[in-house]
Length: 192
Image (cartoon, rainbow, N blue to C red; front, side):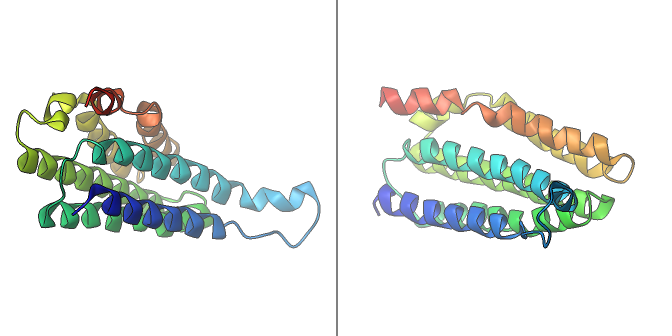
């Protein structure tokens, strides 16, 4: 199978995920600025999730450009990632509607953790398919950011029950760490 088909399908799913998230932003019934105040938590959760989905979309683009061919295992690993990404709108909405209370905040972190795990599975599947000397294997190396992120998500999940602000800070920190595209993948795809 051609990698373009996999990328087009993934891009479509990610576009739908973003569309679903923005639909959670309900128009207020009043026309004053004060009427927007109840939407602040929903908007903030949307912004954070939009950034996360954008990070995955950007890095996914570069990841797929390291592929020379697509296998059935890669298709399933990619669907696994898309499954967890597709849960982001639900947890985003629940977290925002409940003003970042502990259970929705922890579930949001769990979904982020599972997205990171699914990313690792997809990455590992590509390396297994293409070999230890493949473009991706050489580009990823030790993957320090990939190892730090799950720790931050776990810390966010646990702290959701202790201090919501600290939990949010862990999630924001992980997003900031990935905000700059993964230069290793970007560089590797340009060298091919």
